[in-house]
Amino acid sequence: MRIGLLGTGPWAQMVHAPALSGHDEVEFTGVWGRRADAAAKLAGQHGTRAYDDVDALFADSDAVAVALPPDVQAPLAARAARAGCHLLLDKPLATTVADGAAVVAAARESGVASVVFFTARFQPEVDAWITEQSGRGGWFTARAQWLGSVFTTDSPFGASPWRREKGALWDVGPHALSVLLPVLGDVRKVTAAAHGPGDTAHVVLDHLSGASSTLTLSLTAPVAAAGTTVELRGEAGVTELPSSANGGLPAFGRAIDALHEAARTGRPHPCDAAFGLRATEILTTAESLLGERTG
Image (tube, rainbow, N blue to C red; front, side, top):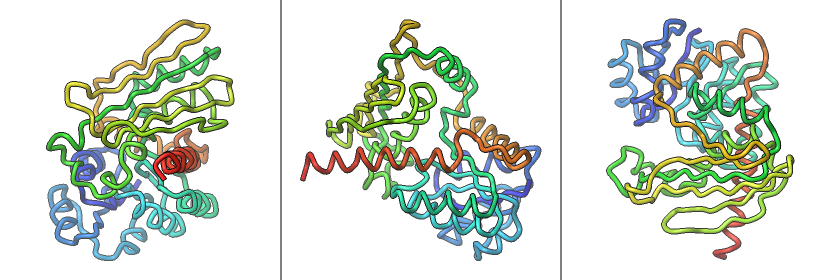
């Protein structure tokens, strides 16, 4: 599969480009970025070419991987889909429902496959745990804590304008939803949302299964308090999300495999653009509740 890369930032440098250039089943077509000099540099590091014209990259590719802010990703993803490219997208798919719906519509109309890279869903230990717990059922409640220190350390993601504007709700909220929804079922209602310290957001969800869940999301946690916890409680007892020794790079390799399989078979992946849109809908509702509390 010929795959082009859109984006040149830290995530593209650390994960996307190395995974694409090192994948046995991928021809790394080239790189397009909003800064031509950055695209040329990243392309040179991985033995591919830089594109000034994004449509030319679409024409030379079977698929595109996107490492761009969500407000930039969504319109380019829809454009790529209309050009016949399969989509390997980052989370969040979009930060407005309209933008996310446009991507889903373009993919469906063009008949292209899509996968959204929710990192945890492509880590083997986490994926196996989700499958096991969703098969058990009978869950009563869950709590998910995604606490990062992006804005309290020298993280390369700390300078990201969209993260500064949208905060943890939109950056790590999609990760929490990607784990909870396949186990507890879709969200019937966002019951409550409240601000915590810094950009911290607390969200309460009511699921169709009858279970409830609470999310605590932050990019401003103290370093000593950072980490991820997901705990389920129900008829089967108590279980916690396992840690994974696999980082973003091998997980992205598995996301490439998933896109290839979805394109080959025509079977939608569980983390396709439609799932990404559902996460956007839930987070949009939570964001509106947070706004009401501060308005």
